[in-house]
Length: 170
Image (cartoon, rainbow, N blue to C red; front, side, top):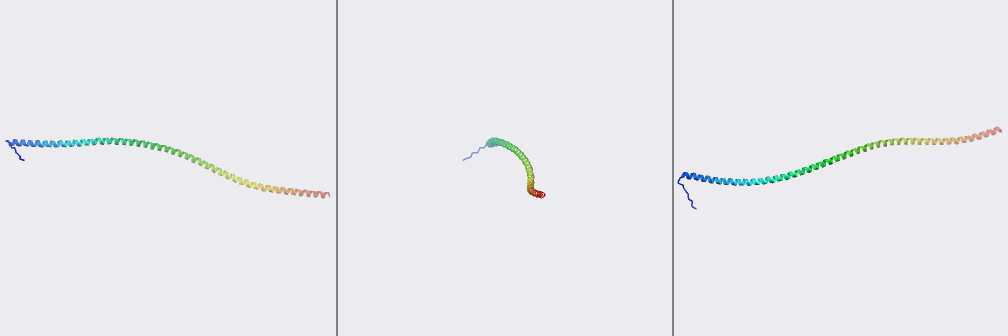
């Protein structure tokens, strides 16, 4: 290819017009590049905007999930507190019942000890009574023996009196 070079009649004018042409071309290229950059930045901005919208939507969903979880946690906490309160009340009631049963048991133990002591005393009395009964029985046997001896002696005295009366009469 052949190149033709145009030379102007007025070199200064040609230069300034050529410089203006070059500057205009450069500026047009620069503008085109800037437009391309702007378009690229717009594209990125749109992508970022889409990402922001998606992230906001995700954030809303996560906030909704978090709120739901917080609500459920509050419900569970309330249930736990209610259950704990019920268990505390039940424990207090059972503790009171246990204390009452302990008191009854202590009273019953005291009664048992008193009854045991009474039984010991009664057994001692019964043993004393048995000794007394044995003593009375022994005394009754002695009395019976004495009564038998008195009868024998009375009989013998009667015979002696009869013999003495017969002797006196005789």
